[in-house]
Every structure is written in C-alpha cells, then in structure tokens.
Length: 414
Ligand SMILES: Nc1nc2c(ncn2[C@@H]2O[C@H](COP(=O)(O)OP(=O)(O)O)[C@@H](O)[C@H]2O)c(=O)[nH]1
Ligand SMILES: [Mg+2]
Image: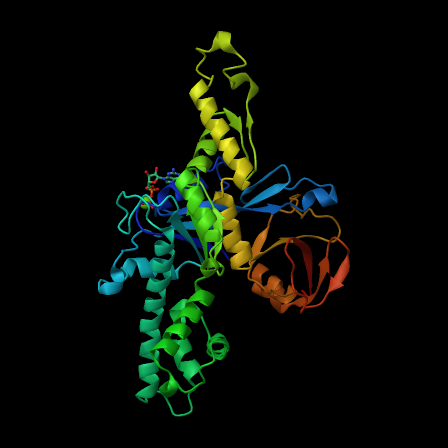
C-alpha cells in the first residue's frame, strides 16, 4: 500500500482549528468509502483534490477509496487536530509532551492563525492583536524544541561517548531521529548554514540557525490565515502578505466558517457545492425569492439565509475559494511535494475485477518508477523490469522520476 500522509493542524486556542477540522472532515461520502477508522476524535479523514486521469482515456473511474466528482478525484488523507499549543511555553513550561508526540506523527503542518486579531496569545478575546506574533511564536517554539535536542547531540559528541571516528552529522542524525532526518540531510543543512563540521567552533547563534534549518526541513508548514470573512482579517492579510519578513511562508486565506456553511447547505440540499470550488449554485426549488407563495415550505431558505450565502459567494469571488481545501493541498503538494500517481494498465485502465483507475496513490517527492513499484508492493519492486507510461505507451526505466498525475503500469519479472 502507498504511504498515508498526516496533516497536522496547529495553533493557539480559539483560532479555529476545530472549525477547520470539522469543515474539512465533514464529508458526504458513501459509507464504506472510508479507508481509516479511528476512535480518536482528533484524527479525521480529509481529502485532497487531483484531476482524474480517466476522462483523458474516455473512461469513468471507480475509486477504491475516496470518490470522484465530475472529473475531480477526492483522495483521502489524514487530518489531525493537534490541540495543546501552550502560549508562554518558551519561558519554562515547555511544549506539552503529548503535543510534541502528536506533532512528530505529522508529515506537514497547517498553522491556523486568527488573522482577525481578535484573540490574544492565550486565545482570549481582544482587539488589534498582530497575527505576526502568533506566526513568530510557533516558529520560535519549534526552533527551541529542536535546539534542545540538537544541544544534547552536541554534548554527547563532545563528551566522547561516541567512537572517535564518528562524524557530527552521524551523532546529530541519531539524536534527532524522531524528526525523520538522516546523516545526508544533516550534512547538507550544516553546509547550508555554513558553520563548518566542528561543533566546538559553533556559538549559540550557529546552533540556533542549524536547529531552525532542520526544523524547516522536517516540519514544513503552511499558514492558514483564518477568519478571512471578517474585515479585520482582510486588512491584516493585505499587510502581512506585503511584508517581506514573511516571504518565506506560504499563507493561504481561509474561512473555516464559509466552508462549513457551504458543506452543510450542500448536505441539506440547499446548494450544490463541491469542496474547494470557486462557486456554488443555490438549488432552484429552494430559492425563497423565486417561490414566494410557498415560502412556508420547510425546504425553502429564508431571505436571511440567502443573504448569508450571497456573502459567501462574494468571499469566493475575492479569494477564489474558502481556502480549506487550498490549505490542505498547498501543504501536501506544494510544500511537502507529494506526487499523486495512478497505477494503470497499458492495455486499458481496467483491472481483472473491472475496476477503472481504482487507486490514486500519494507518493513521496522525487520518487522514481522503481520507488513507485516498491510502494505498490515489495515483490513488485523486487521484480521491476520497466514501467509503461499509459498515456504514450512509452517505456520508462527504473530511474524515471514520477510526475504528478502520471498513469503508470509496472512490468515485472514474475
Ligand atoms: N469569523 C470566523 N470565525 C471563526 C472561523 N473559524 C472559527 N471561528 C470562530 O472562532 C472561535 C474558535 O473556534 P474553534 O474552532 O473552537 O477554535 P480552536 O480553539 O482553535 O479549536 C469560535 O467562536 C468559532 O466560531 C472563521 O472562519 N470565521
Ligand atoms: Mg479546538
């Protein structure tokens, strides 16, 4: 089976993590389509969109997991509400242990930030709070956490617990293994911060810069600028996206409320809305203004409801979408670089069970055709002869780097 990715939602209290989580996991999919069952309420199933390849082959797909809506595949991924970011932790309390454990199980983070500036550092109501403080706070907290572990590695190295010919990158990779890093990566990052390979020569700032670099590499993140349905948030968004200090971050404008409202309205048949779309339709029969005489019908929507929906439509026009799907997809595809790929057959896309493009796998960045074969099954990897690009019928060697939306058949010796 292919890798299953976990996207973690983090942020101080009251920024809208739970609202985002609920909106993203509130899915109207057929029963049995859920690949994950969990009793942990903070772990849910969200979807990322991939343009389906089946229409290019004049076929209709039959997804094993998730679903396909009018040419858009909704591929399942895990979403984790990592609550428990404690403000002021820096000064001594330290990040909560459970928080760190949960964080380590995620592949990429969506930092939900209240861009309206109406919650203070503790999540209590306030006015004119600068969202930049929250962005900085989380980055600094994570850096301090990494630094603490890095320092332990340096201490070990310097106290000579390690054998003489051990390199510093080896010691640090071992010390920081929970962050899924390795010697090569540490070596590359030490070079990047340009501090040399003798830790005796590193000062506090060198160590912090290295810790920060390792953190950025192993805990990539996207900022979900939430509550963008408020004028305060919109003003802050303009200002912060124009601030060069924040160029290094990807900031996605977002309204968890709008996404939740549209999904609810869709589920009750009031609107037709596909998650992530730039627009929606109000169902004809439900429109109150077009059907005044039957306005006491329970299915009709009130003027107030219609007004609310039109406000959401204006929001979508301005920002392109509610931003919930966009934040997840930016995290997985742009920041993490995950590649969606369809296992296919060169002689027709259907398999022996008559399923058409049943799977869309999400595989790690820079995967080769051989890596892809191994992600299907170790036997398929071991027996790899070559792969076939099902669109062109061209043969692909084991070192071919898989591209997003490739449709690939693997030919094996067995
Ligand atoms: N205006 C607005 N308010 C939001 C949005 N998302 C969440 N909120 C509000 O922010 C408050 C905190 O939300 P919650 O999801 O509980 O935050 P959490 O503590 O981070 O999980 C609640 O009053 C929500 O209704 C949004 O997109 N727009
Ligand atoms: Mg919450």
